[in-house]
Length: 145
Image 1 (tube, rainbow, N blue to C red):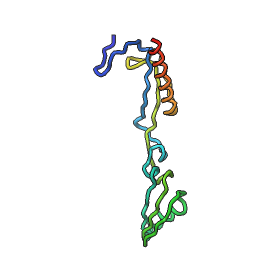
Image 2: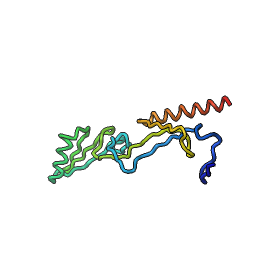
Image 3: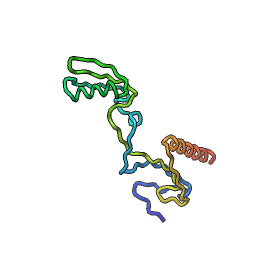
């Protein structure tokens, strides 16, 4: 017989009657992510960059923004300083990194997986849909008695 861990309630049914839904992230892997995926504030609301064109670095930055950045902006010159105001919903200049998520459905519960069933979804939306369908099946079984 199993020893029930302190923070767990012993389930009523057999271990094979359950499914476990988990989302994990590998600790050692990072991936480059789009501004929209990380809800970057610059992407959501736009941003401002002030460049001092009296310096060589400032001139290079301004030239990059104007000629190669491929972003939508308006310029507000104020002497040697130029303020570039960028529209929202476009990639900012930062490089965002996130850890990928792994969406797993496996048979059983904390006591084990006797069926050895395991599925990995590629997208969070698919995992959520699977979970919702499973919850509906459980609700239907409960209502039938």
